[in-house]
Length: 248
Length: 196
Image (cartoon, rainbow over all chains, first blue to last red):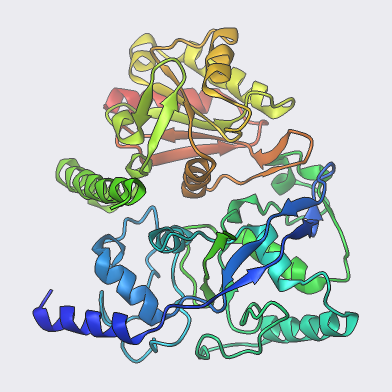
């Protein structure tokens, strides 16, 4: 790397304030699609990035860890779409603005990024709890549901900058309406895609016991279906992430 | 520098070295980045201290993610692997490893896994039972596309999958479900073992 590039990296690092983290009180999480005997999961208080990780922030990480550049990343850990919207290994280019959420990153990459910062990906329970505050009014819930469905239905090409949507009761932004997000226990999403059983159900032990709760929450179902269908080395256009950590 | 950070640094260096090694020795450049054995971290091997996955390079392997207290399909899967082992020609059997990784590290402690291996009379020379952190298990499962979720009563819902890896730790084939004949698996493993 040239000295100029190093200087630029240092400038970028100095210029960009670290993302703020918001405290989410603990609570109890009942999975939308619960196993037969699955009980509400206690969730300890935790902190969540107030917005998704941006291209600029991810670029810093890749500079420090060249094994995560798109030309070096092992195929096991990220498919060929990984950072395909960047102009080069260490160049964002016109398709990836610094302040946009980073997308086209795999679960492995997202996990490595958070670990590097002493954080981790939020669990399903944490993410869903942050996104569905239990004390939110019925009105707010309905409004959130409407916005989510509008987002899931919209054909999207250009991502807004990260942190653009209004904060929820915890001060967390962009949980809906911008991107889909990786979670730590992504591979705990097991949804038999054919509810009548058949081949897909037989590939799971216990799959027949899965039963959806609250069938009216279609948006939540969409997230579960999405998680269960996306493999963790995939790098997709509208799939990014944010980090979490346990509350001190 | 904290110990964790130092460990990560070392891990990163090791990854670099492993990738270099993989790149040099490979016939098939396309799949050099696909080895499962590049995943970092130390695992406890039942009855034999700690290992890194990189140490499993060199022999083709069956890989199964399981848990020892499974009441439904896991016993059948382990039994299937034992049957496969018996059906293999002796030369092929001697070359293959059988790697079993628990998806329930909390309950499947290392002594518990060792006890399981004794109960099932698994040959300690060929059967490698591994215990890792929940993060390590999650990462390995992610790399092979195995999904698992606790059901709340100590059991798991999980993908039923037997995987066959080549000597570099690259998955060559897998078989899902229980309703499949074993002979094609035996044939595939024999061919892989004979090819070296």
